[in-house]
Length: 587
Image (cartoon, rainbow, N blue to C red; front, side, top):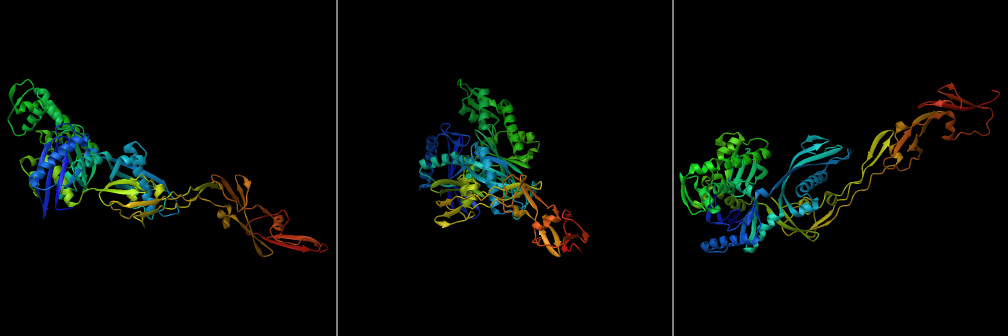
């Protein structure tokens, strides 16, 4: 990013635009403009009337340009944290116990988990869901092998594997709405980030980022919450109550229109008395404590909702709560949040721009907690810690990809709605059957992975993709089903060996498929019952196995088994020695 950036924070009530520069380790605000929406064109951080919002941005941009003396061509923006959806999900798959887990197995599991997450968010199929949502990031919580947690699956063997992931999604309509506004104002998108990330980048110093901290942005329409732990934000949330509810209580108690009620609310922090004119035209002067008494229940309700959402997201009270946004200045709110979380009141504080020593410039109307997010947007843009927004073509269809880095081919295909079966190829179905009462599984052949080219060159799934890249994919092919023949399962212990006149003779077992006699070259059908029986042998059976001249004999056949006299019906067992000879009848 360049050393100067135009940052835009388009909020529910106001638009803040500022030009931020970096010099050494410090950032300075070159100029800024704050403009209130004339009508409700924004709801809960999403653009609802593109033309009205664009008109406001255009007026703000032109005002800045007139003072700066040059045209602003690009803008850095942020998507509201309240529009994010964070989902935790698990995917499982059966494995061949004879093969090591490899990178393709890991990818397949990851895709399946993400597909389940996008289906949960959108209520639609994964392919349709990815048309409506960007996956802005995901992280693996835990891998499992045969139901037990494991650090690394690669190289392991087992019958099943699973993964737990946390994935965060942003509606594409939010991003497209912001881009539409910029286009109407003659602005290009320089970068896009998420409001909680922008705010936390300057509100939470590096020394605190390992702590479990709740960042609460209390605006006009909603209170947005981001929870940090171990150096990153791991959960987002929102409560649909914020500053406007407090203003409405003031209006109700003192018969004021909304604008007058808003003005009174802003005076509560620094005034002993407030003056106003009610809807009947009567001018009044009342003590601030009277107004505070009128809104006491509403303030407590707001704090209870914020605390409840923090506990829901975090599972326990955080180490500290940092409040930003215009609504955070409401008297008594910090103490009420602390009480609801049951933490010391000193652990809930308000962060304003004046307290951040590496940000210089600004003015009286850009020094409070509401300035944190717009300045954070600019800092993120200059530092290059924003989300990348790429347009990539997959088999001729354009795919928008939003993420923290240049995506891999695999990530682009995933965002385009390709399931793992079309990328990696499903293995063929296994052959299952019973062998002597025990289950046997013959794995199918591995699938043939997709053939991929990026900008005309052969590419792998881990190759990085740049903006404007064209990906061609020849989809994966499934593997052949598992197959086996009877002879594949005959072992030495299934045979018996006898000795005939000193010669070792193997005797093959008898085989049956579903109770019917079968040959060794027969293919085993799926879900069949195969039986391999050791042969039941008598002396007479020997003559079907070996060549023995029974013609032209003179006398009688002398049979001995293990040196003892025997007959043609004497049973034989493994290792028996049979001696056959002709004896003269007259002996």
